Image 1 (cartoon, rainbow, N blue to C red):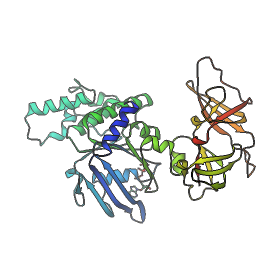
Image 2 (image 1 turned 135 degrees about the vertical axis):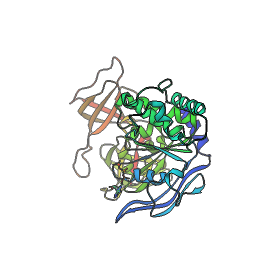
Image 3 (image 1 turned 180 degrees about the vertical axis):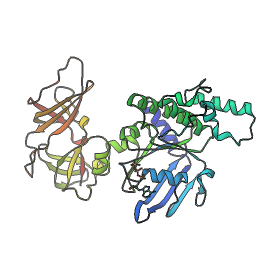
Image 4 (image 1 turned 30 degrees about the vertical axis):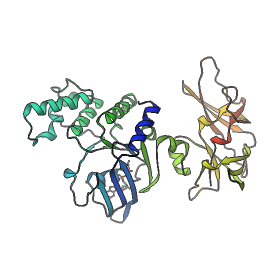
Length: 384
Ligand SMILES: Nc1ncnc2c1ncn2[C@@H]1O[C@H](COP(=O)(O)OP(=O)(O)OP(=O)(O)O)[C@@H](O)[C@H]1O
């Protein structure tokens, strides 16, 4: 994976690149079913962009409308400045890689990769060189003569990628391309895909329901629910500053405690939170509650708080509690802690989850142990 600083530098460059895909108020109906409800979105040239959301939110439909496999009901889709209205899939500067590889088992690897060059006027030798180049790009140098049916899942997906890249599309659309692979192979391919994308500079649009995959790979992510974009941001912003409780819940784990609003100032909002007491939430950390929420709440990530004794945070406050549950993961331990006094306004106890990186020589604490939880107001988000 690229380092954080080089990823940031790359993002800074693409942030000012020309728009590659523009969707303006895109609506899609399947009969009465309203699958896309006014999608507005600009994806820039060279970006690694992800559409993330739960099953049925419309992310595949959106990808397919960009590819031209679906007509839109209304709105506009532009690719590289050109209106795609009436332009069939095969005339669009896009190519798609599917979850189910879709490679031809009776052809060799090279024949699969060169498939799209059938009507290309270049000489046989030139095409063979292009196939070799594409295979090298995906780490399959020298595999050209292999039979496709004998390849592993990861290798088949590389062949599918090479077959798409050889056509030099402006946009590569990837529909859950890694979801059929086992965890180790998936993680390896994630890193390789990022490197490949940086190398070829093509705009990648990935559909995934896997939030971790989206965070690892993307320059920016659109989180979708029910045919709409709920938040569009870079991975860090999405994780640290989710604009709604729903997004916060979908991206990683977030603890929620009920809150009562006491007052507002120029610097933030003062709230009372059972267990934590009175605390001022900084203005930058204020997000929306969703319809159906039972009133305001504060949220914090499991790694934004710690069990005392580990590392003291600056400006930290300390709340005592009892360890309710311990889940040991080798590198990490999750503690569920019932904070004293947290059975607040409604009498319900809500243990909070705390993630601690395990350090050699430090004992994992037991269920039932009393513990002090250290937290700072700056790591709380208010959903109101
Ligand atoms: N051809 C179709 N005819 C009718 N309804 C459809 C069609 N294609 C998709 N839908 C519906 O549109 C909604 C969005 O589907 P879509 O495949 O885009 O979701 P998704 O977010 O990609 O989910 P998944 O990850 O499960 O594929 C779903 O409710 C689906 O049932």
